[in-house]
Image (cartoon, rainbow, N blue to C red; front, side):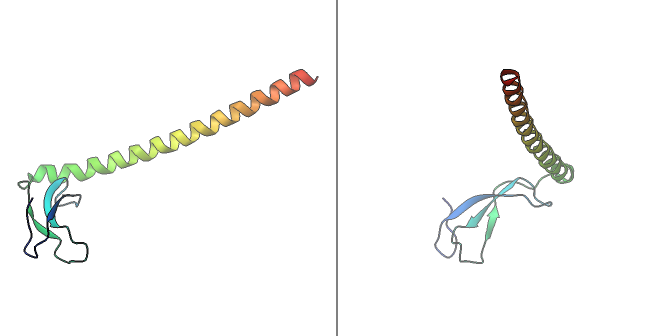
Length: 95
């Protein structure tokens, strides 16, 4: 474990900024400090990766949102189907 100048341990963190997407770095583990960044673990990314990765992350977020909405719609449809079958059987057996 890497120690920071204040004597506390550092934690390994991943940056998701547009400039350093997915790049790992050390940061001070004390939450009350303003030190934050200690040093990079990974080497700098190539310029093309810096351009491409944020777009891929946004696309993944959009797909995950669409999947969540599709799951909600599927659940609504299952509930409607159950209700319609329930009403059908009640109607069938009562008349």
